[in-house]
Length: 118
Length: 110
Image (cartoon, helix red, strand yellow):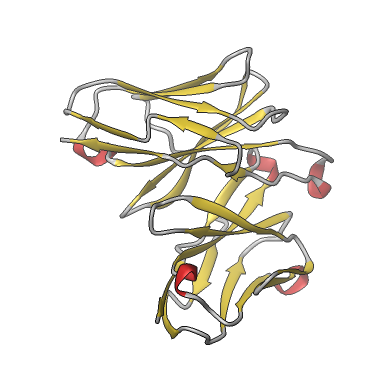
């Protein structure tokens, strides 16, 4: 058990709908990352939040948004869902130490949310 | 762009055999992690290894940062070792995102 929790485990919905995925990081971790794993794209970085602020964005669609709350949990919102959004969505958390090339940033992953869009 | 390449793409072993998985990366590594994705989809941390060698039971890993590769050794493989093994490089100047390789799918037969 990594200490990162994600809900729900499975989600089945229809095209055009909106869903919210939730992540609670490990105790003490300020950073939360979201990744998408699909069959054709592999594991791809979506977005990083640090202590409530957005730090970096990957190839995240405009239909997707995220936020990190004061208690450090994070939510990923997916709207106007398409068939191609079906994937496994992972949240990871870490505590970052050091800086620059000496940075230490080991990421721990939650169990994932499997999204199926029909 | 930064690329992470893993080999072989898939591997079939008999229980008890040893194996070596390789990860090549295209940029200077700051942080390198190895993960095991089990058949239920969970990503399990195996090693955090920017350089040097680490061992954990039957598994060990070595990263040679100057030559931009990392190796994962699995000895005396068991059926529970089956799944997909990923290496990932952390890009510190891009928000700390991980760039994953395509994975090595390992199947251990009894």
